[in-house]
Amino acid sequence: MPLSHLLLVIYLLVFGFGLLLRFLNLRHLKRYGAIVPSGFEGSVDPERLAKTTAYTLEQSRVGLVESLLDTTLLIVFLFGGILPVYDRWIASFSDSFVLRGLLFFLVLYGVQFLVGIPFSLYSTFRLEARYGFNTTTPKIWLADLAKSTLISLLLMGLLLSGALALVQASPRWWWLWVWLFFAMVSIFLMYLSPYVIEPLFNTFEPVTEEGLEDEITALMGKAGLTVSKVQQVDASKRSRHSNAYFTGIGRVKRIVLYDTLIAQMTHPEILAVLAHEVGHWKLGHIRRRLILMEASALAVTFLGWWLIGSGYLPLLLDLPPATSFAAQMVVLSFLGTLAGVLLTPLSSWLSRRHEWQADRFAVELSGLPGALASALVKLSTENLANLHPHPLYATFYYSHPPVVERVVRLREAETRAGC
Image (cartoon, rainbow, N blue to C red):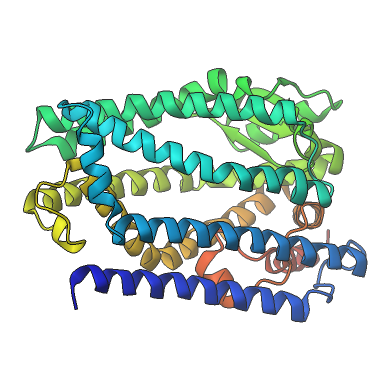
Protein backbone atom coordinates (compact mmCIF):
# COMPACT_ATOMS: atom_id res chain seq x y z
CA MET A 1 0.00 0.00 0.00
CA PRO A 2 1.40 3.46 -0.91
CA LEU A 3 2.31 5.62 2.06
CA SER A 4 -0.26 8.24 1.06
CA HIS A 5 -3.02 5.63 1.16
CA LEU A 6 -1.86 4.38 4.54
CA LEU A 7 -1.88 7.92 5.92
CA LEU A 8 -5.38 8.47 4.57
CA VAL A 9 -6.61 5.26 6.21
CA ILE A 10 -5.04 6.29 9.53
CA TYR A 11 -6.62 9.73 9.32
CA LEU A 12 -10.05 8.28 8.55
CA LEU A 13 -9.74 5.86 11.47
CA VAL A 14 -8.83 8.73 13.78
CA PHE A 15 -11.73 10.81 12.48
CA GLY A 16 -14.07 7.84 12.84
CA PHE A 17 -12.96 7.35 16.44
CA GLY A 18 -13.84 10.98 17.12
CA LEU A 19 -17.28 10.44 15.61
CA LEU A 20 -17.76 7.36 17.78
CA LEU A 21 -16.96 9.32 20.93
CA ARG A 22 -19.38 12.05 19.84
CA PHE A 23 -22.10 9.45 19.23
CA LEU A 24 -21.54 7.83 22.64
CA ASN A 25 -21.68 11.21 24.34
CA LEU A 26 -24.95 12.22 22.70
CA ARG A 27 -26.57 8.82 23.30
CA HIS A 28 -25.55 9.03 26.95
CA LEU A 29 -27.10 12.50 27.20
CA LYS A 30 -30.36 11.35 25.63
CA ARG A 31 -30.54 8.45 28.08
CA TYR A 32 -29.73 10.35 31.29
CA GLY A 33 -30.36 13.99 30.38
CA ALA A 34 -33.69 14.19 32.23
CA ILE A 35 -32.16 13.12 35.58
CA VAL A 36 -31.34 15.89 38.05
CA PRO A 37 -27.72 15.28 39.16
CA SER A 38 -26.61 15.18 42.78
CA GLY A 39 -25.97 18.67 44.09
CA PHE A 40 -28.25 20.31 41.52
CA GLU A 41 -31.54 19.66 43.32
CA GLY A 42 -33.58 22.84 43.41
CA SER A 43 -31.36 24.54 40.83
CA VAL A 44 -32.57 22.77 37.69
CA ASP A 45 -35.97 21.46 36.72
CA PRO A 46 -37.11 19.11 33.91
CA GLU A 47 -37.72 22.06 31.61
CA ARG A 48 -34.16 23.35 32.13
CA LEU A 49 -32.70 19.88 31.60
CA ALA A 50 -34.66 19.45 28.38
CA LYS A 51 -33.37 22.81 27.17
CA THR A 52 -29.81 21.83 28.07
CA THR A 53 -30.13 18.56 26.16
CA ALA A 54 -31.57 20.29 23.10
CA TYR A 55 -28.82 22.95 23.16
CA THR A 56 -26.05 20.36 23.45
CA LEU A 57 -27.53 18.24 20.65
CA GLU A 58 -27.87 21.20 18.31
CA GLN A 59 -24.37 22.43 19.09
CA SER A 60 -23.07 18.96 18.30
CA ARG A 61 -24.95 18.80 15.00
CA VAL A 62 -23.53 22.13 13.87
CA GLY A 63 -20.06 21.04 14.97
CA LEU A 64 -20.45 17.76 13.12
CA VAL A 65 -21.42 19.44 9.85
CA GLU A 66 -18.49 21.85 10.14
CA SER A 67 -16.12 19.01 10.99
CA LEU A 68 -17.30 16.92 8.04
CA LEU A 69 -16.83 19.85 5.67
CA ASP A 70 -13.37 20.66 7.02
CA THR A 71 -12.34 17.01 6.81
CA THR A 72 -13.58 16.67 3.25
CA LEU A 73 -11.74 19.79 2.13
CA LEU A 74 -8.55 18.62 3.86
CA ILE A 75 -8.70 15.16 2.26
CA VAL A 76 -9.31 16.62 -1.20
CA PHE A 77 -6.50 19.14 -0.76
CA LEU A 78 -3.90 16.69 0.55
CA PHE A 79 -4.86 13.44 -1.15
CA GLY A 80 -6.73 14.62 -4.24
CA GLY A 81 -3.76 16.12 -6.05
CA ILE A 82 -4.64 19.74 -5.21
CA LEU A 83 -1.61 20.52 -3.03
CA PRO A 84 1.08 20.24 -5.76
CA VAL A 85 -1.08 22.20 -8.21
CA TYR A 86 -1.65 24.92 -5.61
CA ASP A 87 2.05 24.92 -4.77
CA ARG A 88 3.04 25.52 -8.41
CA TRP A 89 0.39 28.21 -8.79
CA ILE A 90 1.72 30.13 -5.78
CA ALA A 91 5.30 29.76 -7.08
CA SER A 92 4.30 31.43 -10.35
CA PHE A 93 3.73 34.77 -8.59
CA SER A 94 7.21 35.41 -7.22
CA ASP A 95 10.74 34.11 -6.93
CA SER A 96 11.03 35.38 -3.35
CA PHE A 97 11.13 32.59 -0.76
CA VAL A 98 9.51 34.79 1.90
CA LEU A 99 6.83 36.24 -0.37
CA ARG A 100 5.87 32.83 -1.80
CA GLY A 101 5.55 31.34 1.66
CA LEU A 102 3.55 34.29 2.95
CA LEU A 103 1.17 34.15 0.00
CA PHE A 104 0.84 30.36 0.33
CA PHE A 105 -0.48 30.56 3.89
CA LEU A 106 -2.52 33.76 3.52
CA VAL A 107 -4.57 32.31 0.67
CA LEU A 108 -5.25 29.17 2.71
CA TYR A 109 -6.28 31.38 5.63
CA GLY A 110 -8.65 33.25 3.33
CA VAL A 111 -10.33 30.01 2.22
CA GLN A 112 -10.67 28.84 5.81
CA PHE A 113 -12.06 32.24 6.76
CA LEU A 114 -14.76 32.11 4.07
CA VAL A 115 -15.74 28.54 4.95
CA GLY A 116 -16.16 29.49 8.60
CA ILE A 117 -18.39 32.54 8.09
CA PRO A 118 -21.69 30.65 7.52
CA PHE A 119 -21.13 28.57 10.65
CA SER A 120 -20.35 31.65 12.71
CA LEU A 121 -23.49 33.38 11.44
CA TYR A 122 -25.68 30.38 12.14
CA SER A 123 -24.23 29.77 15.59
CA THR A 124 -24.57 33.41 16.61
CA PHE A 125 -27.92 34.45 15.15
CA ARG A 126 -29.80 31.15 15.10
CA LEU A 127 -28.44 28.68 17.64
CA GLU A 128 -27.33 31.10 20.37
CA ALA A 129 -30.36 33.33 19.79
CA ARG A 130 -32.76 30.39 19.96
CA TYR A 131 -31.52 29.51 23.45
CA GLY A 132 -31.48 33.06 24.75
CA PHE A 133 -27.72 33.69 24.72
CA ASN A 134 -27.12 35.99 21.78
CA THR A 135 -27.36 39.74 22.37
CA THR A 136 -25.08 40.92 19.57
CA THR A 137 -26.33 42.81 16.53
CA PRO A 138 -25.31 42.40 12.88
CA LYS A 139 -23.42 45.69 13.17
CA ILE A 140 -21.38 44.50 16.16
CA TRP A 141 -20.81 41.11 14.53
CA LEU A 142 -19.49 42.71 11.35
CA ALA A 143 -17.30 45.13 13.30
CA ASP A 144 -15.85 42.26 15.35
CA LEU A 145 -15.25 40.26 12.19
CA ALA A 146 -13.44 43.14 10.50
CA LYS A 147 -11.27 43.93 13.52
CA SER A 148 -10.40 40.32 14.33
CA THR A 149 -9.57 39.61 10.68
CA LEU A 150 -7.34 42.66 10.42
CA ILE A 151 -5.52 41.75 13.64
CA SER A 152 -5.11 38.16 12.48
CA LEU A 153 -3.70 39.24 9.13
CA LEU A 154 -1.26 41.63 10.77
CA LEU A 155 -0.05 39.02 13.24
CA MET A 156 0.14 36.32 10.60
CA GLY A 157 2.06 38.63 8.31
CA LEU A 158 4.53 39.48 11.07
CA LEU A 159 5.02 35.91 12.28
CA LEU A 160 5.18 34.28 8.86
CA SER A 161 7.46 36.88 7.32
CA GLY A 162 9.80 36.79 10.30
CA ALA A 163 9.86 33.00 10.46
CA LEU A 164 10.43 32.55 6.71
CA ALA A 165 13.19 35.15 6.75
CA LEU A 166 14.91 33.23 9.56
CA VAL A 167 14.56 29.97 7.62
CA GLN A 168 16.16 31.56 4.58
CA ALA A 169 18.93 33.26 6.55
CA SER A 170 19.89 30.24 8.67
CA PRO A 171 19.09 26.91 6.98
CA ARG A 172 20.94 24.94 9.65
CA TRP A 173 19.66 26.66 12.81
CA TRP A 174 16.31 28.10 11.79
CA TRP A 175 14.45 25.70 14.13
CA LEU A 176 16.04 27.42 17.11
CA TRP A 177 15.63 31.01 15.86
CA VAL A 178 12.03 30.48 14.75
CA TRP A 179 11.13 28.96 18.13
CA LEU A 180 12.78 31.86 19.95
CA PHE A 181 11.05 34.41 17.69
CA PHE A 182 7.61 32.88 18.30
CA ALA A 183 8.23 32.66 22.05
CA MET A 184 9.24 36.32 22.27
CA VAL A 185 6.22 37.46 20.26
CA SER A 186 3.89 35.35 22.44
CA ILE A 187 5.22 36.91 25.64
CA PHE A 188 5.02 40.38 24.12
CA LEU A 189 1.37 39.80 23.16
CA MET A 190 0.59 38.70 26.73
CA TYR A 191 1.63 42.18 27.84
CA LEU A 192 0.10 44.00 24.88
CA SER A 193 -3.29 42.33 24.53
CA PRO A 194 -5.02 43.70 27.69
CA TYR A 195 -4.10 47.28 26.79
CA VAL A 196 -4.29 47.37 22.99
CA ILE A 197 -6.23 44.42 21.55
CA GLU A 198 -8.97 43.64 24.09
CA PRO A 199 -10.22 47.27 24.34
CA LEU A 200 -10.88 47.18 20.59
CA PHE A 201 -13.75 44.78 21.25
CA ASN A 202 -15.03 45.57 24.73
CA THR A 203 -15.32 48.40 27.23
CA PHE A 204 -13.48 47.88 30.51
CA GLU A 205 -14.36 49.89 33.58
CA PRO A 206 -13.91 49.66 37.36
CA VAL A 207 -16.28 47.25 39.10
CA THR A 208 -19.44 49.14 40.02
CA GLU A 209 -20.83 46.55 42.47
CA GLU A 210 -20.51 48.14 45.90
CA GLY A 211 -17.89 46.53 48.14
CA LEU A 212 -16.89 43.85 45.63
CA GLU A 213 -13.55 45.37 44.65
CA ASP A 214 -12.44 45.66 48.28
CA GLU A 215 -13.39 42.03 48.94
CA ILE A 216 -11.46 40.85 45.86
CA THR A 217 -8.41 42.91 46.79
CA ALA A 218 -8.46 41.43 50.31
CA LEU A 219 -8.71 37.89 48.89
CA MET A 220 -5.79 38.48 46.54
CA GLY A 221 -3.75 39.96 49.39
CA LYS A 222 -4.43 36.85 51.46
CA ALA A 223 -2.99 34.82 48.58
CA GLY A 224 0.07 37.06 48.35
CA LEU A 225 -0.88 38.64 45.04
CA THR A 226 -1.05 42.33 44.16
CA VAL A 227 -4.05 43.44 42.12
CA SER A 228 -3.45 46.40 39.82
CA LYS A 229 -7.04 46.60 38.56
CA VAL A 230 -10.40 44.99 39.24
CA GLN A 231 -12.56 45.63 36.19
CA GLN A 232 -15.80 44.55 34.64
CA VAL A 233 -16.31 44.09 30.91
CA ASP A 234 -19.49 44.67 28.95
CA ALA A 235 -19.77 41.06 27.76
CA SER A 236 -23.55 41.31 27.85
CA LYS A 237 -23.62 43.36 24.65
CA ARG A 238 -22.67 40.18 22.77
CA SER A 239 -23.82 37.22 24.86
CA ARG A 240 -25.45 36.21 28.13
CA HIS A 241 -22.73 33.62 28.78
CA SER A 242 -20.73 34.46 31.90
CA ASN A 243 -17.08 34.17 32.88
CA ALA A 244 -14.21 35.76 34.80
CA TYR A 245 -10.45 35.78 34.34
CA PHE A 246 -7.31 37.50 35.46
CA THR A 247 -4.16 38.19 33.53
CA GLY A 248 -0.65 39.40 34.17
CA ILE A 249 2.94 38.26 34.40
CA GLY A 250 4.69 38.32 37.75
CA ARG A 251 3.05 39.32 41.02
CA VAL A 252 0.80 42.08 39.67
CA LYS A 253 -2.53 40.81 38.33
CA ARG A 254 -5.47 42.35 36.48
CA ILE A 255 -8.88 40.86 37.28
CA VAL A 256 -11.73 41.06 34.77
CA LEU A 257 -15.32 40.05 35.56
CA TYR A 258 -18.04 39.68 32.96
CA ASP A 259 -20.95 41.93 33.83
CA THR A 260 -23.18 38.88 33.30
CA LEU A 261 -21.27 37.04 36.04
CA ILE A 262 -21.70 39.92 38.48
CA ALA A 263 -25.43 39.94 37.77
CA GLN A 264 -25.80 36.17 38.27
CA MET A 265 -23.70 35.53 41.38
CA THR A 266 -23.37 36.60 44.99
CA HIS A 267 -20.14 38.11 46.30
CA PRO A 268 -19.03 34.88 48.05
CA GLU A 269 -19.58 32.93 44.82
CA ILE A 270 -17.52 35.42 42.80
CA LEU A 271 -14.74 35.29 45.40
CA ALA A 272 -14.76 31.48 45.32
CA VAL A 273 -14.44 31.45 41.51
CA LEU A 274 -11.53 33.88 41.65
CA ALA A 275 -9.91 31.84 44.44
CA HIS A 276 -9.94 28.87 42.05
CA GLU A 277 -8.15 30.92 39.41
CA VAL A 278 -5.66 32.14 42.02
CA GLY A 279 -4.95 28.48 42.74
CA HIS A 280 -3.67 27.96 39.21
CA TRP A 281 -1.12 30.74 39.72
CA LYS A 282 -0.05 29.85 43.25
CA LEU A 283 0.31 26.15 42.46
CA GLY A 284 2.45 26.91 39.42
CA HIS A 285 0.02 25.53 36.85
CA ILE A 286 0.33 28.52 34.53
CA ARG A 287 4.12 28.46 34.69
CA ARG A 288 4.29 24.70 34.10
CA ARG A 289 1.91 24.86 31.16
CA LEU A 290 3.92 27.67 29.61
CA ILE A 291 7.19 25.75 30.05
CA LEU A 292 5.63 22.56 28.70
CA MET A 293 4.15 24.42 25.74
CA GLU A 294 7.45 26.08 24.86
CA ALA A 295 9.41 22.85 25.32
CA SER A 296 6.95 21.07 23.03
CA ALA A 297 7.19 23.88 20.49
CA LEU A 298 10.98 23.63 20.51
CA ALA A 299 10.82 19.87 19.98
CA VAL A 300 8.32 20.28 17.15
CA THR A 301 10.38 22.93 15.34
CA PHE A 302 13.50 20.76 15.62
CA LEU A 303 11.60 17.72 14.34
CA GLY A 304 10.21 19.81 11.49
CA TRP A 305 13.72 20.97 10.56
CA TRP A 306 14.98 17.38 10.58
CA LEU A 307 12.08 15.97 8.53
CA ILE A 308 12.22 18.72 5.92
CA GLY A 309 15.98 18.35 5.66
CA SER A 310 15.67 14.60 5.20
CA GLY A 311 13.57 15.03 2.07
CA TYR A 312 11.16 12.39 3.35
CA LEU A 313 8.02 14.51 3.77
CA PRO A 314 7.08 14.80 0.06
CA LEU A 315 7.24 11.00 -0.28
CA LEU A 316 4.49 10.57 2.30
CA LEU A 317 1.90 12.12 -0.01
CA ASP A 318 3.53 11.26 -3.34
CA LEU A 319 4.55 14.88 -3.89
CA PRO A 320 7.38 15.93 -6.23
CA PRO A 321 10.85 16.32 -4.66
CA ALA A 322 10.80 20.04 -5.47
CA THR A 323 7.80 20.62 -3.19
CA SER A 324 8.16 24.03 -1.52
CA PHE A 325 9.01 24.60 2.11
CA ALA A 326 5.50 25.98 2.77
CA ALA A 327 3.82 22.90 1.29
CA GLN A 328 6.02 20.63 3.36
CA MET A 329 4.98 22.58 6.45
CA VAL A 330 1.37 21.75 5.60
CA VAL A 331 2.27 18.04 5.46
CA LEU A 332 4.12 18.40 8.75
CA SER A 333 1.10 20.09 10.31
CA PHE A 334 -1.10 17.21 9.13
CA LEU A 335 1.23 14.69 10.77
CA GLY A 336 1.19 16.80 13.92
CA THR A 337 -2.60 16.62 13.98
CA LEU A 338 -2.48 12.83 13.91
CA ALA A 339 0.16 12.72 16.64
CA GLY A 340 -1.81 15.22 18.70
CA VAL A 341 -4.75 12.82 18.91
CA LEU A 342 -2.57 10.38 20.83
CA LEU A 343 -1.59 13.12 23.29
CA THR A 344 -5.10 14.48 23.82
CA PRO A 345 -6.09 12.12 26.67
CA LEU A 346 -2.82 12.81 28.50
CA SER A 347 -3.23 16.57 28.09
CA SER A 348 -6.84 16.36 29.27
CA TRP A 349 -5.88 14.28 32.30
CA LEU A 350 -3.16 16.72 33.31
CA SER A 351 -5.53 19.66 32.95
CA ARG A 352 -8.24 17.95 35.02
CA ARG A 353 -5.66 17.18 37.70
CA HIS A 354 -4.80 20.86 37.87
CA GLU A 355 -8.47 21.76 38.15
CA TRP A 356 -8.95 19.45 41.14
CA GLN A 357 -5.91 21.02 42.80
CA ALA A 358 -7.22 24.53 42.12
CA ASP A 359 -10.58 23.60 43.64
CA ARG A 360 -8.85 22.42 46.83
CA PHE A 361 -6.76 25.59 46.93
CA ALA A 362 -9.89 27.73 46.51
CA VAL A 363 -11.57 25.99 49.44
CA GLU A 364 -8.51 26.55 51.65
CA LEU A 365 -8.09 30.18 50.60
CA SER A 366 -11.71 31.32 50.74
CA GLY A 367 -13.08 28.82 53.23
CA LEU A 368 -16.21 28.73 51.08
CA PRO A 369 -16.64 25.26 49.50
CA GLY A 370 -20.39 25.78 49.36
CA ALA A 371 -20.01 29.09 47.54
CA LEU A 372 -17.76 27.52 44.88
CA ALA A 373 -20.21 24.63 44.50
CA SER A 374 -23.17 26.98 44.02
CA ALA A 375 -21.12 29.11 41.63
CA LEU A 376 -20.38 26.05 39.48
CA VAL A 377 -24.05 25.08 39.57
CA LYS A 378 -25.03 28.54 38.37
CA LEU A 379 -22.34 28.65 35.67
CA SER A 380 -23.31 25.26 34.27
CA THR A 381 -27.06 25.76 34.42
CA GLU A 382 -27.00 29.32 33.11
CA ASN A 383 -24.69 28.29 30.24
CA LEU A 384 -26.69 25.09 29.55
CA ALA A 385 -23.61 22.91 30.03
CA ASN A 386 -23.97 19.17 29.52
CA LEU A 387 -24.43 17.67 33.00
CA HIS A 388 -24.27 14.06 31.75
CA PRO A 389 -21.19 13.59 29.55
CA HIS A 390 -20.21 10.05 28.63
CA PRO A 391 -17.25 8.98 30.85
CA LEU A 392 -15.08 7.99 27.87
CA TYR A 393 -15.81 11.25 26.05
CA ALA A 394 -15.00 13.25 29.18
CA THR A 395 -11.80 11.24 29.76
CA PHE A 396 -10.62 11.92 26.24
CA TYR A 397 -11.65 15.54 25.69
CA TYR A 398 -12.59 17.29 28.94
CA SER A 399 -9.98 19.75 30.21
CA HIS A 400 -12.11 20.21 33.37
CA PRO A 401 -13.60 17.45 35.50
CA PRO A 402 -17.34 16.98 34.85
CA VAL A 403 -19.07 19.70 36.83
CA VAL A 404 -21.31 17.25 38.70
CA GLU A 405 -18.24 15.49 40.14
CA ARG A 406 -16.76 18.83 41.22
CA VAL A 407 -19.97 19.90 42.92
CA VAL A 408 -20.27 16.58 44.78
CA ARG A 409 -16.73 16.90 46.17
CA LEU A 410 -17.29 20.51 47.19
CA ARG A 411 -20.55 19.65 48.96
CA GLU A 412 -18.71 16.89 50.83
CA ALA A 413 -16.02 19.39 51.85
CA GLU A 414 -18.78 21.76 52.98
CA THR A 415 -20.30 19.03 55.14
CA ARG A 416 -16.95 18.10 56.71
CA ALA A 417 -16.26 21.77 57.49
CA GLY A 418 -19.73 22.23 58.96
CA CYS A 419 -20.35 25.26 56.72
